[in-house]
Amino acid sequence: MKFIHYFLALLLGTFSSVTFSQDSRPNGVEQLRQFVKTVQSAQGEFAQQQMRSPKPNEPQDKPKLVRQTSGQFIFQRPGKFVWDTQKPYEQKLIADGKQLLMWDKDLNQLTIRSANQALAASPAAILFGESALDSQFELEDGGAKTDLQWVNLKPKAKAGQGDLPYTKIAIGMGGGLPKALELTDGFGSIVLVVFGQMQINPKIEPSRFQFKAPPGAEVLRLN
Image (cartoon, rainbow, N blue to C red):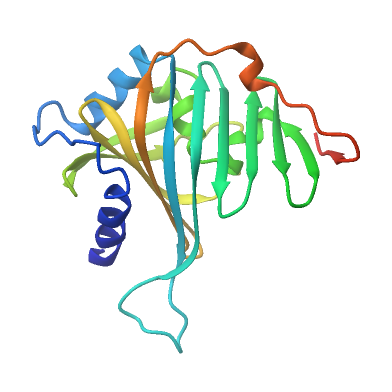
């Protein structure tokens, strides 16, 4: 949809120093496979928009912007990542390979879940998990849009994938790096994520994937 491309172009403009490859070689699928194969860790920034389909009494020419957030991320294979939302509120998602920690500063609450719920909690975990991406998804060439080469991902029928709430998953690749992530669920909600300032294979201290709730915080264990 044209208005999705418009919103995506605005998000891509958030990271003005990011340059995009105009070269159609290799395609998005090849770039994504190479990224998963060769990149074991990364860190950078993200900007995210969540939108929904317009209601009958709203303009029908564009989706309704529900939420816009931004922050920083780090990841290290297999399955470790930090998704640190800084604006407009502070929240952290931390996966240490065994469990998923969800910290909400405003609520002073830490929720601990099983690590296999990481995909549902943070779709970007698709990029941060095990290196065998082809074992989890069918990868299809999505062509070129907004100066990126796109890959459509279709979850394979496999234990642990059944709860993935998205009907469409697409990753935009540029210069060998993931630049954007687009997700659509069965209710017409759309999530657009753009990555910027990405550093490849930095050394990341193990302590970055650890988190201890401050004194007095509520701790919920939902494993």
